[in-house]
Length: 374
Image (tube, rainbow, N blue to C red; front, side, top):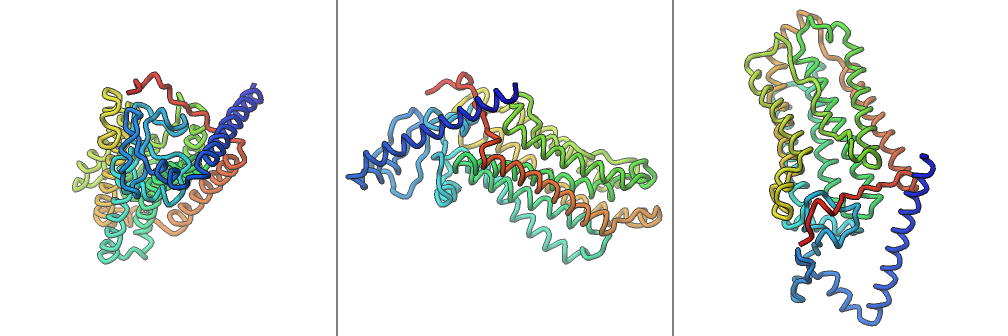
């Protein structure tokens, strides 16, 4: 049965590539004698109704397309228009980041702008705390995890209009970045929030190894969900639902902020699953206020809350942690963080190689029944 499904996917992929080559050959023959006509056709904008825009469109303005004019692999549920040109080059993908009407523009900026904020935050924090001290290593890991997932996410959304293999590899890297953030957040939670006399602290290395295994497993399941189990996906948002609840020794200065972070995690999960508000008004939230943008904003808010609260927790609880002899060190923070990330990187590299070779093929095909073509 698996071999039959694999043959079917391989056949579908071969037919798709053959059709792409035929279209390219026809385009070359059609515009061989008239290169100016080819240039004008590429720069035309597609109207949301599938109608061509004015021929006087600005020559530097990239094209946008209706969902019926892009392959199924590039479509998103309930998003009607604003699609970028499939199989774009890197320069075209970069230019699309500055076209506000495309449906992935804000998905890029909602993580790229927080990245710049977190870089400034780390610079300010490094002048207030001695981050070279082992006690503050979890904060350094937290910053590295936040910046990594922001870079991976914004990069995946920017390059998502390139050829299918590049798109799939980028989102595999995106999932890995979220795992890196989740594990780094788990380290800060473990050392700065858990009660020193709790069972988790007593079996310190068992707890930390379990955290690492969960993050690597989440990377694998999320990556495979790109190709299998579309209806029962193990999506990356699950990895935000880790150790948020602190014990009785949680500092009251940050208690309500941690509760607010938990509520934001529930809210981001809601947006990711429900596809609200575009579910109720397909085509009205293609460029702005779609659920994935709200998901990004909630995730960035959670990360900002963690970056603000964990340094406060670390300073206030230091004496308590010293008394309980539960202090972070290089092996339990930076080294473990590097090992877990290396495992995720190897896993993503293997899956990426299988994607490039054609062994892993995405048959994602959002049904057209969920959106009425306009």
